[in-house]
Every structure is written in structure tokens, then in C-alpha cells.
Amino acid sequence: MSNQLPGAIAIGIKRGNLEIKQFFRQRESVVFTLLFPLILLAIFGSVFENTLAPGVTFSQYFVAGMIASALVNTGFQQIAIYIPIERDNGALKRLRGTPMPATSYFIGKAILVTFSMLIQVVLLLAAGVAFFGVNLPTAGSKWLIFTGILISGAVVSTILGVAFSSVPKTARGASAIVSPVVIILQFFSGVFFVFTDLPQWMQQIAAIFPLKWLTQGMRSVFLPDSFATREIVGNWETGRTFAIIAIWLVVGTALAIRTFKWDRD
Image 1 (cartoon, rainbow, N blue to C red):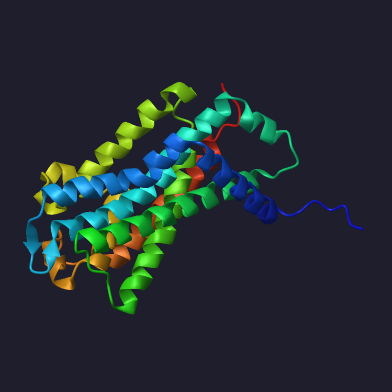
Image 2 (cartoon, rainbow, N blue to C red; image 1 turned 60 degrees about the horizontal axis):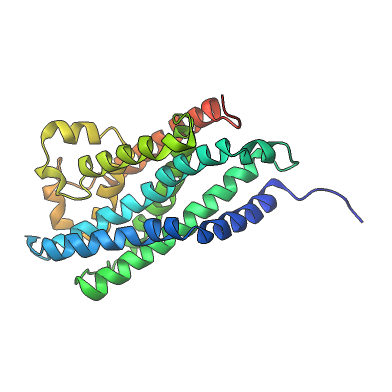
């Protein structure tokens, strides 16, 4: 009988299952992470009932932004807050002392992010269709773009969360540092408001970061192609969207490798 240890991927999958179980044991986190986007949709969808263009209600626009925002909430924000907590309570140090490869730890986090993200997306789409008249795309090409944005967005958000996790010096300060960054980017990136209605300086800052491109990518899926004329350059810029996400993936990976810490300073 072989005594060979399981591979990094197999261990990572088991770690991911454990991460999901631990997540659901924290009821406050479950409610905030999974239901908060629905609460925002209910508030904004009820307050803003105007039509932005023929066939485009504010709810239709808002759902696209909230799905993109869910990628950042479950990836960047959740990871950048939870890792400092695990670092502070010694969990990372104990894991580092086990035979588990470091890669497995990050695979586990990626599984948790993917699981949480999919639940949020399903809930948002179901609520949008049922209560706010949101229309789902019918073209197969739109769903391909949707899948590509989901996968690439989840990956880059997770990697950037790992990289940013070294910024908070303590677990107590993690939420205070990470959450404002996410909220500001949401306002700047056209999640809560029509992007082209924002001041130009906000648009320019937002264009640096991936959330703006994730929201624009989701708008290309859920809004009619005629609405693309309302974008800054008059089209969806799908190729540029994926290119910028890829650049951030490379940058985030380099930063994560360079800055990630298993122990407190």
C-alpha cells in the first residue's frame, strides 16, 4: 500500500470543502456576504424605477453592476479580511507547519470564493427576474462573455485579495482598511450610478482598476447592444476588458508572491 501524500489539488479541494463549512458556521458573514447584494437590489430597484434607455430599466443596469461587484466582494474583500484574521489567530502559522502545500491553501480559498460568488449570482438573477423585470440574455455569445467575466473576475479578485491581505497589520484593522476601498471603487466604477454620469476624474481613476471593466463587461451581457453608445468610447470594449483583467492578474500574482505573509510581523 502506498503511503504517498495526496497531491496539492486534492488537498486543496478538501481544504475548500472545509472553508465552505467554516463559512456557513459564521451566520453574520453568511448574511452579509450572500444577502447584502439582494438588499441593495431591493433598495435601489425600488427607489430608482426610471428607464435609462429603450428596454433598459435602472434595475437591469444595476443587476449587471451588482454581479460584477459580487466578484470583488467575495474575492478581494472577503479574502483580504479573512487572511489577516487567520494570520493573527495563528491558523496560518499552524497550517504552514503541516505537510499541506501552500498551493492547497490558496486553492481552498478560491473554491470558497467561487462557491459564494455563484450563490450570489443565482440569487441576484432570480430576484431581478422575479421582482424587478430583469431580462436575461438569449444569445449564446452573451453567456460565453458572462462565463468568461465570472471566471476571470473571480480569479483576479481572489489574487488581489491575497496580495492586499498584507496591508492590514492586524485582524482588527482589516475590515476598516479593506471595506472603504471596495465601497469607493463601487461608487467610482458605475455600480450604483450610470458610469458616464460620473465626473470625468472619477471615470479616469476607475479605469485603472478591474472593477470598472468587470461592470462594463457585465453591462455588455445584460444590456442591449444599442446601449453601448452610452459608454465612453461608444462600444463595449470586450477585448480591452479581458486584456486589462489579464494584466491585473499578472500584477496581482506577482504582488501576492512577493508580499504574502504567513506570520505576523
